[in-house]
Amino acid sequence: MRRLHLHNLIEKEGDLYSAVCLELNVASQGKTIEEARKNLREAVELYLEDVLEAEDEQEFIPRPASMEEWMKFFEAEAKSMAKELSKIPLSKRIEFEEIVYAK
Image (cartoon, rainbow, N blue to C red; front, side, top):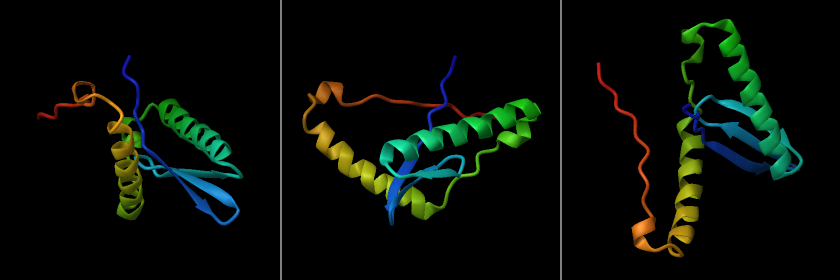
């Protein structure tokens, strides 16, 4: 079974952390990073359950978050990757995930 791989962005906003699933533009929040992450997972699961129950493929058209949100994600990911990659041997640093699109 194929797993759905989703990207999440969590940001501090005032006293709370906001979390958004970038592919689906589903959002939630929490008092801590862990709570925001948990609440987002629940929100995404509820959204996907609704889509599956509707049995309508058209309901599951990804509706991505804004480019600004994606850019924040990529900036944070680049910093994290650089830090992590410096600790791993080159031969073990690369793994490809691909999907082939053909009509």
